[in-house]
Image: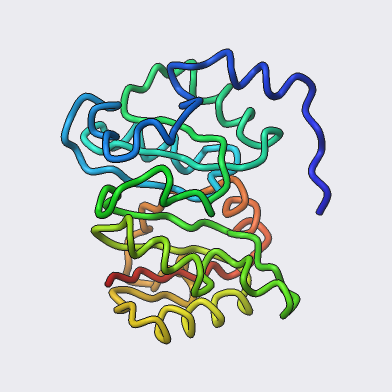
Length: 213
């Protein structure tokens, strides 16, 4: 899907240096200093418009959140929704996930969120999937904790399960219908993304898995 250009996106992002880290590679191994505390650091890769990260940060002030998004036209929307909240436990980075090892040291991240990542359905594009062996190797180096993944794409989910298994990640939790509620259950408190809200409204099934090394 072609992404719509957003007027003056770069400048609008640069208008919020308190939120967007302009030179993230300068802070490798120093992210606790950026937040001025030793709280856990959770990372969302491909954060989109930021609803998921924003709600997490509001609900969990004792956790630090970093959102990565490579498209200016997307991250600018997150920036302008999060900036007015003046949250001190959230930072955004406008980079590609392939640069993770230049931004974070070993074990510097305590959780990674992969929400509704691009499925790259063609076989020749498998290496671009955020759960490919290439990316899992990056996560393993920076992560001291778990990965949580959500998607509505069955093909991507099945591919990801095989990729996690083949690369020796341990399964902690798995759901084939995250939002399903049994008759005797209370509704789950699930922090959702913009895409997720749309998919659930349409009746799409949401798949979920949590893994660790």
